[in-house]
Length: 210
Image 1 (cartoon, rainbow, N blue to C red):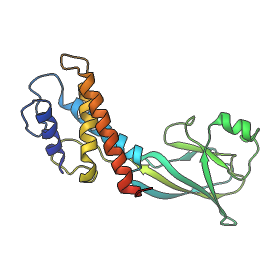
Image 2: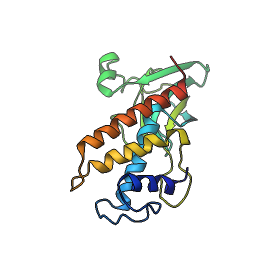
Image 3: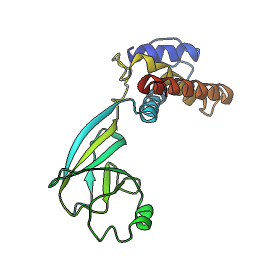
Image 4: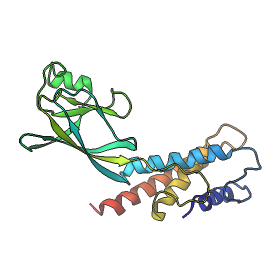
C-alpha cells in the first residue's frame, strides 16, 4: 500500500474529503499532525514486535567506555560480546548503572570481561559495557531498525500490508485524543484495542503459535 491510500482511508473515517491526505478542510487536524500519527504508529509497532531487524558487528578497543550505535537504531534485540583473542561469545543482557553497582561494585574502575550493557542512562545512540572491557573484542548487535518517515508523497509504506491496519488504528487513536471539538475518548480507546489485536496477530505471524 502507498502512503496516500492510507491517508485517504483516515480521511474517510474522520469524515474528511479523501484526497490522499493533502488537505483537511475541517481544520480539526493538520496534515503534519496526521503524518505524525502515522509515523508514531509505525515506530510503535516496529518496536513492540521487533518487526524489522538488522545485524551489525562493532569493533571495540580495550578500555572503551562509549560505543556508538547505528543511526537507525530503535531498540536492542540481542547483544553478544566476542572476545577478539579467544573468539568466545558471551550474550549480554541490559543493566543500568544501579544494577551494575549492586552486582559488581567498582565495575567502572576495574576492567574485565563484559557481562552486561547499559543504554538507559547513556547519551542517545550509545551504550556502555559493564564492566569496561579489559581486552579488545567485537559487539555482535541485532537491533530493531527504525523505518523511513512517511511523507504522504505517494511512496510505499515501509511495512508489509498485513500490518497496515495496526498503523491506521494507532493514528486514529492519536487524532481522536486531540483536545478540541471532536475529542472522543471512547473511540480512541476502541482504536487502542484494535491496535492490541493487530499487535498480537503480528507477533503470531512473526513468531508462530507458542
